[in-house]
Length: 194
Image (tube, rainbow, N blue to C red; front, side):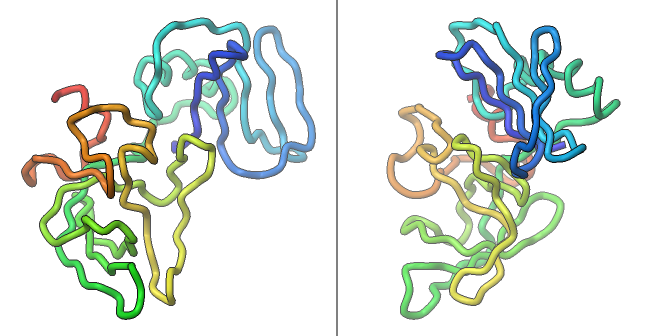
């Protein structure tokens, strides 16, 4: 399951979204609220949560804390990695644009991603937001077209993912000093290793 999960410290609330549909009604429970689009559950707001910790997008501690709330409505589920280490195996400039057409190895398959970063190149290890991933601002990555080319995800910068770490380049997509054994792993797992 891919979902948007964010701790909003100023409201002492954990916000969870399952899809981008408009909220048409809510239902208040003891310490949380269920968000609906007609009869479909599209999100939850868990109230009165306090922590001084800054949580990453796919923080394991936060995921496990909200698991019982989600399981109550969706049964057993597994979280799917949204942001993974990927390797650009081919990269060619798209004429008359700032874009590049890239073939990217996800560990499970090779996909096409259109990228506008100036530092994208063949053989770089970078961060891929897979289709269906939720960005920190609550927007969702979808399959799309740029300049007529299909794109199946997004190569990300540290800034786009709100990663504050001096080890990663400030401009362009993230560049990882890794090898092929890391392809397909969650970036959060790798960040915790480094």
